Image (cartoon, rainbow, N blue to C red; front, side, top):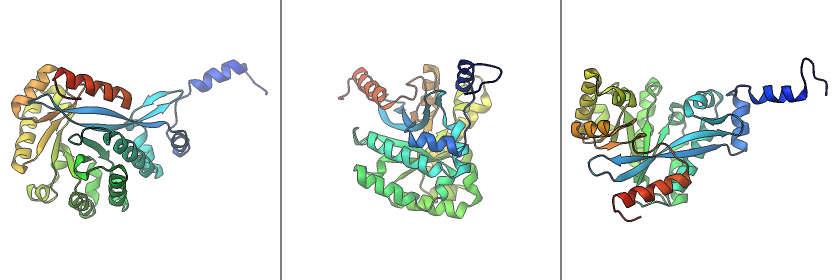
Length: 277
């Protein structure tokens, strides 16, 4: 080996400190080496404190660069056409996990715009429910990408199929704003998500508070639940509950956790509420 302007140890150190490149090759290598995993964040019924379900959040557990969040690698996976593989990983891992839990608990999963365009999405979800003995009604598919509005007819068709097959549909407030009340009613959404940016500023921003109130009012008019994300304090949890928000998640309750720690957290939480485990 010929090393110029340094030694082997220096070269190894530089390689370890190189930034991770999010491209087709690195994602393919990560898939082959089982580096993608789901972390779970509990969703809480704000009036009672009971756990109603978990959201599955994909993480890239890189051996050198640590844990990478979805915003770092999902755009690359969408561009390279590998988002379907990651969606399959998330579905299989999440369904296998939720099968172990009380059948009353739900499982939420973000579905990217590219996956919504996938004509095999419905069949994949149906097959996975059958394989893991999961009632589709336990699954909440979160429709969060405004880019899906590029082809609203196709998106509406896929969402209608999913709803007909028993899956529950979630939507965030920014996307909901692009639809008429009639369209929202037609697609039978079951949850409307309040963005964490509004939750973080609700205590001192009248604009954020008004946005939250209008979101809750919209959801109430549709007969669906509201879920606030990014709750980080007791004050926020109480404030949202008083405004009529039914569900919440955030660091105040728990950070996203791997499967082992999620099961331990759930056991401890239910004990604190004196619920059966």
